[in-house]
Length: 96
Image 1 (cartoon, rainbow, N blue to C red):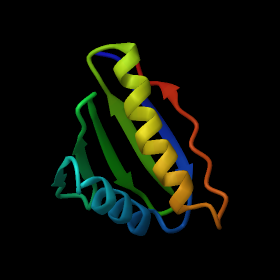
Image 2: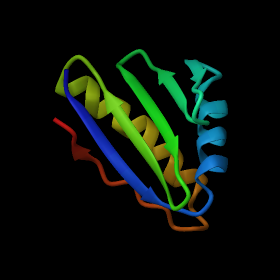
Image 3: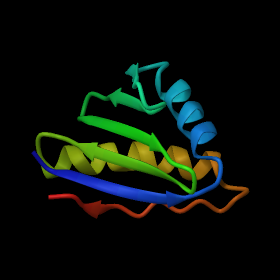
Image 4: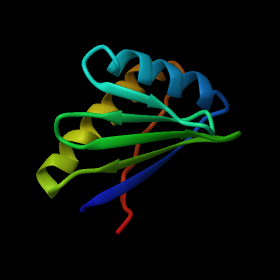
């Protein structure tokens, strides 16, 4: 299963994780994780948001590369829009 990871530098990771999960939760299944993160199940695949002190770690997985690109786009585009004032940039790297 193709997977990728993005480490987004921010001092407001818990807030962005919660905002992204709440926003995407309107149309997708959201699971709150014990460590304060979230698992988001999209039609194309899944994403995990892991807030840390200095960054938001986002993991994407999907059954194929095309679906992985969709998950990356959904997570990345929304986070960049929410973090536009702080100029957040999402850069995905292969985790496999």
